[in-house]
Image 1 (spheres, helix red, strand yellow):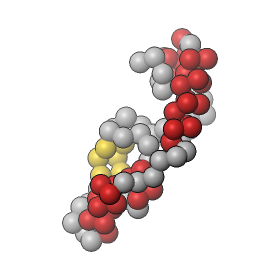
Image 2: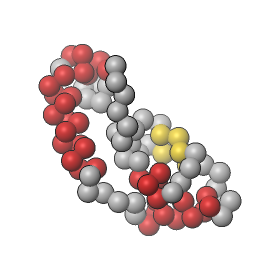
Image 3: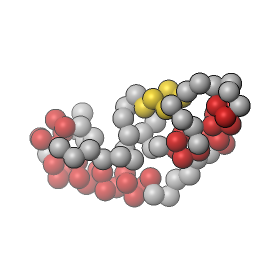
Length: 81
C-alpha cells in the first residue's frame, strides 16, 4: 500500500503526508447520511448490537453508533509513532 500505511510512510513520507492532507480536507466537509443515521437508530432501539464497516471516515460514530469495528482502521484518529 502506497499511502495510509507504515511501509508507505517509510518509503515515501512526502507522498503519504500529501495524501493525508488532501483526505483530511475531504473529511472536514462530510456528515453522516441517512444510512448512518438509520443504523445508529436501530442500534439505539436494541435491534443492532454493533457495526462492522470498511469505511475509514468515522461517520458511523458521528451518527451515534457505538461498538463500531473499522476493518481498515480510521482516518479520523492519528497514531504517533
